[in-house]
View 1 (cartoon, protein in one colour):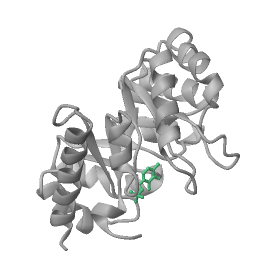
View 2 (cartoon, protein in one colour):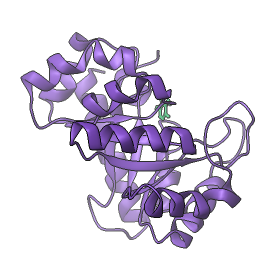
View 3 (cartoon, helix red, strand yellow):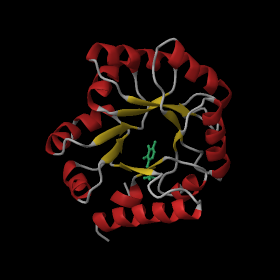
View 4 (cartoon, helix red, strand yellow):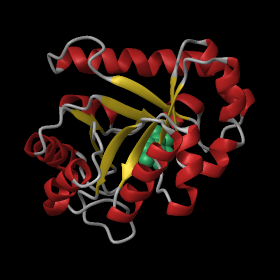
Length: 219
Ligand SMILES: *Cc1c(COP(=O)(O)O)cnc(C)c1O
């Protein structure tokens, strides 16, 4: 299958899942995760109409997205991997959305850079729903306090919550937990679901899914 066909297949599976969950068509947006793929692999997906992409490393994204954004100005780029504070300036300059606000230090760095560069990014707080020690994210029970801190101390608008469930677990309870926490924070956007589980995520209320290998092939 060509990459455009795989893209169309993923989009139609999202529509089927929306319908099955009795949610409106296009309630869920697709973030095409292009990490490890080069500009030549990404261009056909842009040409097929996809406009929202995700990358997990700042440096890798800097090597391809200034060029691709120059060619197609209405692209939106999401950072979906952990951010170090020494990369905050570059991340704020290049990305449109940061989905991985996961600790006070990085929230402060992003806030300071947005002011310095006069750029307003859309921001998600990453929640470590499985409390995995190797994984980034705020602990579920600290999520409300952290979102409140971002809003009140840093004057930062948070758009939603993001999670990556443990690979070896049924993702449903993690998606349900993220939805519950978002409700407690009065947030209505949920970034959850990847190639293996995006239909389940749609069922649990995802408003965006991050799909890589089902579109671009295996990495
Ligand atoms: C790589 C990645 C994805 C996409 O994973 P696939 O299984 O290839 O769809 C989604 N979210 C994050 C945070 C990732 O790092």
